[in-house]
Amino acid sequence: MSPRDSSPPSTGQPGGGHPLRVDPATESALRLWVILSRAQDAVAQHAMAHVARHGLTIAEFGILEALYHVGPQLLSEVQKRLLVSSGGITFLVNRLEAKGLVERQSCPTDRRARYVALTPAGEALIARLFPEHAAMLTDTMQALSPAEQQTAADLLRRLGLAAASTPPADR
Picture 1 (spheres, rainbow, N blue to C red):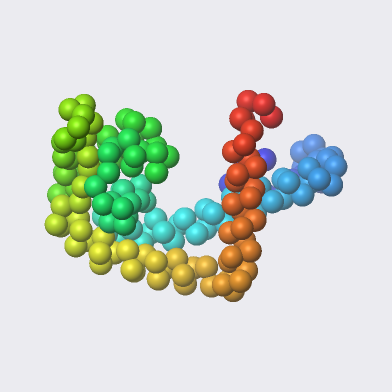
Picture 2 (cartoon, rainbow, N blue to C red):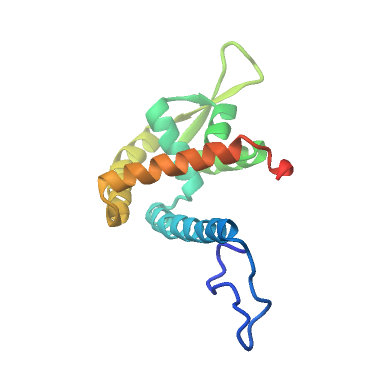
């Protein structure tokens, strides 16, 4: 079942496809997957629209945000933090470098390693942009009370850790 599929599973009604016959546990898991995917997509649309107004992609914003909060990092550290490929991080850093927002720096202990750091322009942009972004996300999440947000975060963390503990090929 695709998370973007907006139509409900077929119930075997005329003009529909094959009826969906699953046990209650499977039905619950499929329903959760669709709801979770749609909720994530809806919230992500707000985040992407906000950073796009500043000429950034959400991945570029993620790099700037990580450097803003942690400081200069090895490219491989940023790559792991953002869950992108090594080619992807190179592409993103190249784009941010062309915009004058980050710079590469040599690693004093390993000639092969490169750090990425904010430029003064990058620091100024993310210092202004991050509080706006945080406020936008706070507003977007107001459908849930702070306590409900904490409960949702706890449940989703548990779900993510359980899913990550078993390699996908084993399922």
